[in-house]
Image (cartoon, rainbow, N blue to C red):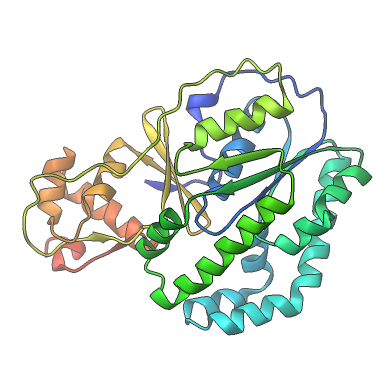
Length: 313
């Protein structure tokens, strides 16, 4: 298992798209945990692998990279202070992102951008950039029912008090959907990422030959669990997409690749299975399990409650 900034989308490769070098701005918007970043990532990778130059712009990544104190505030649970920080620096953030988008479009790139700023969308700020650069524009609204968002939210160990904020955000996005005409609307509770990507490609490249029958990917169900302290998955917000014999994972705005065994190991981390039991069920050896779990622990996807992580004395 490894961190993968450029994972391979094998289910959609080897199809040569005819982009005719047409610059596009594809703008994704939707509430947190709706799955917009996963779809945007897969779209960007699919286009790039098939001959279309792509610039991926994710607002959250710029926030974390431009303002390191923001990450520290969030980790410390100082969410109000973090919001105030970004509120005071939003003008700078917007200017930087706008210039990057404009420059990418001017150079003929397809720009794939996702964010949660409803004010900028209502103003049509980014569409104006596309128009000014002579590019085409596609607005994509990504959502899921409130109950699904709450389930994803809770499984990511976010405090219950924050659920009220999620409810308000969800209501705001519902109003936005009623007010604006989006070019595409995707419900991630019923549409897997691969299908969403094909939907969007069919709109910007109607002559594309891509035909894929996607299947949603879920963590494997654990059966015959052995009692005892062991590693426990805390990657509730994990997005996973099958890629040939492996998996593309998105967790906390970071990308990873896992093979079949590594993905199975993650699914077996339920807090009850021991290292030895996980190795038996995953069809591998305990040392491989220890190495993968240590990687998962550092990535924030697994907590460990037993002494096995250090390996044999």
